[in-house]
Length: 502
Image (cartoon, rainbow, N blue to C red):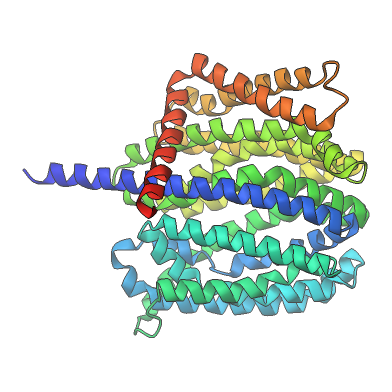
């Protein structure tokens, strides 16, 4: 008699927590987007393309090695929400040990990377970033505790602070003339800050006695997560690795600048959806159909948000970069346009990846990653051989246009979601967003508008937004209502908080 109300109450509480988390992280996402954009503008004026290229090459080493920070411990630990207290100590020591190994591994490989890319400056850059690796590992377990509690407000506030601090320090160091080191030096500083702040908020019990079987379980379950993450990091750096071997630092810098500019909407929106959704999906593990339907719903909402942002970015690239920097970064425009159109097709795979983790299907995630890496490198290498950096950009966009949607289709259709429902997540948003951007771009080329970059940017932004929302209301009214209600709810919540604080 009492089980049904309890389930409904729990489901309602879970829904409210997820919605609240989405709102907090959505606000943080837009704040971060604005901060990142301003920082990108400042750094583009303070640093040369060669500086961007040098740090891009350093990241090919450090980003891959940083997959050792948690060794997949966070995903495995989050699966143990009900008994998390008993798993904190072994999880901490495993995570910290591999963080230390990651740091010393980067120290060792730095000279080889400098020789490989013909840049002695990489040694100091890689070592500077490496110091942050064990520092970040200190915050792994406290972060999992906070996510398990669904305290997304704390995470959103801290993430916003960290983004502001990271960009401020980078700009400050660039203004001081530190070149590529401007990107590297903030990492160890903020690693200390995060460790201290997260431990004060949610200190883990690290000296509790634990059994060897727990360590073996963490290592066994985490190893496949670690392998998957390592493969994904190798893939994420694959285009820079290839460009570092076939192009100059200036060309690598232009591409690195363009990629950072283009990927922001995807990483912010998809990343925030992921942080909110994963704990919720983990609690639905005993209800696989509801779990899959929740993932599909999140994919649909994310797609209708990320597609217009990225397509608008592509349309604004030429007048926007010319208005801000003149001719200095115009060679990066084609890369921005190509990547902005290809990258949003990767966003939904973040959610289906979380779905696999929530279902503890770590081996399946590994299989997808193992196939993706050689496919990505073959495409990127072929593109680079055919047309240099432009060929690499086209190959990267082609990869994201094809492979991530295929993996999402395979994951969701296997869980009784129809093929048509999954394809709609990709086709309809891209058609509506693409049509809206073409209309807006055509309007920006009319007489008296095409000669003024700032006016073109404003026209593209306003016309595309109006056209997209109009088409959404006509062709997908349920999505339009859902987005409208989310935004109205967000505004009401902000007003209430202001009234309370006043």
